Length: 92
Image (cartoon, rainbow, N blue to C red; front, side, top):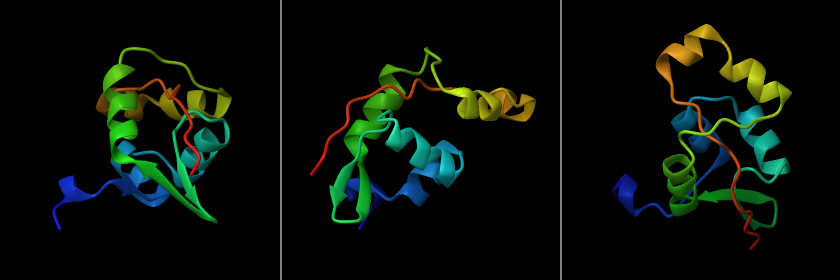
């Protein structure tokens, strides 16, 4: 199976793709800033929703204090595009 065939990502996969910590992903999910599907205790982030969130919001920066500390780190700024995490929340 190719990666393009995968419909959802785990929290760990999203953290790796966005190059942020898993804790920050969970925090953003809790604040409903990253869209999710839930299957019991299993959390999945839809590929289409994640791609839309990154593509549509790549020029805006809105995040809480913890994210601000993470995103304001000089090393992060020099290597990454900061995205606006504001997005819809889908529950399964």
